[in-house]
Length: 382
Ligand code: SF4
Ligand code: SF4
View: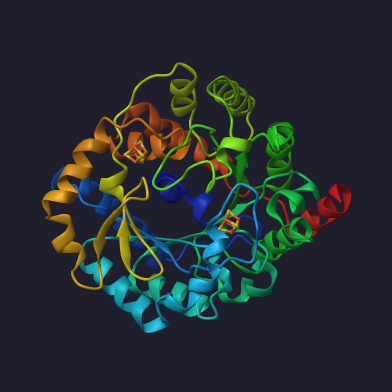
């Protein structure tokens, strides 16, 4: 899913715009510091989420082979309207949240996406978006207030179009990244989901990220995932997911890439602990709250939790159900996603994680590769 807080606030190289030399505005520092403070408050006192993870729409224009979410597109009529999203942001802010993570479906299919990003930033949130990238080129002018863009790319050339089920995707995404670099300050990173479909792209994707001067984070599809309502009929995981042995190999490969200096967002300690199969304590429910396009709260395993249309974040966070969810999560260990372990280590303020993030963050994000060089790179890759 996302990026860790320290990566977000990790230093001027992250927050500034290297190629233009733009300084970070005082207001931006205030926002980043506000998010960091809200994490500390959660860690030390409230133990409630400081990041609103908002699935902004039921719609998606892609048909990825590893996903079934796009089948929800007819439900787009139930997406919250602009004013309702503003209200949601107000409510989240009042409940102490300072991070806003936008995903979907595909958030950029919303016509009001620019207004929402602007509102969130103005309110004081750090703004983060996960996008399939196909509308980035067109919508980049609306995203000047976006802090971080996580762009899903699952192959290092046009074969990506096959995996993502949409012709022209790879070229659109690359042009979109170039445009974002040209006209926005957003820090950009690939998110690459590895399955049986694209095992051979692990190393080439890291090389591509390095060439483009952006970060990369890896996800995996695992064949045994049995969250929520998934079964062999409703999820492609059983067909394309990685076995336990393959997952171990996957962690070893990306750890090697990390050691070789590729711009992976995962820290050394997270990758090492996966390779060594070390148990860990999950703090995800204390960090993120997941809200659907029609304002329902779901748990991390996609089980239903709460109707936010009839209540409030504060009521939910003080409920017995939420406290049980938090407690059960601590010994869950179900997620094989590196990001969740990373968030949890950050939340614990684990020194190796904090030093890892602080030390490596400068190299991680958006080195000085101008947009026109990215365009050259696209034509070579094509
Ligand atoms: S872009 Fe995202 S939501 Fe859309 S089909 Fe692909 S993985 Fe699913
Ligand atoms: S490890 Fe368990 S509790 Fe934590 S995010 Fe994953 S499924 Fe949820």
